Image (cartoon, rainbow, N blue to C red; front, top):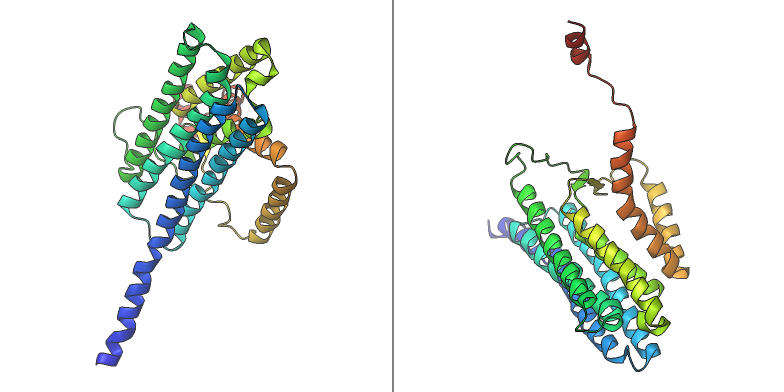
Amino acid sequence: MENEEQPKAVHKGLKKGLYVIPTAFTAANIAMGFIAVLYSIRGYHFAFSDAGVASWYFNRAAIAILLAILFDTLDGRVARMTKTATEIGVQFDSLADVLTFGIAPIALIFSWAIGSSFNEKSSEYGFGVFLLFMYLMCGTFRLARFNLQATRPRVLMEGTPKVDKKNFVGLPIPPAAGLMASIVHFAPVPLISYGEANARYNTYLIMTLVTIMSLLMVSTIKYSSMKTVGLGRRNLYLVLVIAAVGMLIFLYSKYVLLILSGAYVAHGVIWYLISFIRPRTNHPAERSEAKV
């Protein structure tokens, strides 16, 4: 009897050990956000004196945020594959996202653009800080709404969109942070190095982008969740695509990451506009009622 019970205990212990794997990826996500904040602060210290050193720190901060997106994607997929998803894991992941994709990107954008381009006493500086704060608020609200929909999948009130596993409601905060990090990775030199006039103009564009992404996060526009990718029969083609994209990122990361992040942020808006342009077909029941 004792020999028969031992394999069950070993299997149970192995099952418990699997729960550590998604948590480890979430911890790596937090570590990347922590590093991004520290490097953004260091980059701001050199933004006015040594543009080369500042760009090195800003680039490393942007890469840390982009790596955090990879870890954030893996922890969810690993949890689903090993069937180790838990309620505390969902909450832990969301708190990690507030740091890595909420605080870290605004620290980077502030140090790289707003903080160095505008005088602290100017109205542009104050408005830029306000927009960054609103981005953080919208991103936190987006995460709270996602958690609520994940734990209570039924419709909560009239007009609340239904939960769709294939789509997200509103722009997720990781792609929003990824687009900002990709822009900095593409041009890590602090904007003030391009001259005061160019710095102010480019910072206005960045502020506009931050505003648009803040509104998209709290909108009801659907974005593909990519959760069903790789579940079909064409896994071989998926592996080839991932390998090709990985090689392109390795060779041309500045261009490929910017294109990928920009395409994801834009595709929800594009499909939303197409839904208005495309003629809608009436249901057969509606047609019969119309004839009557």
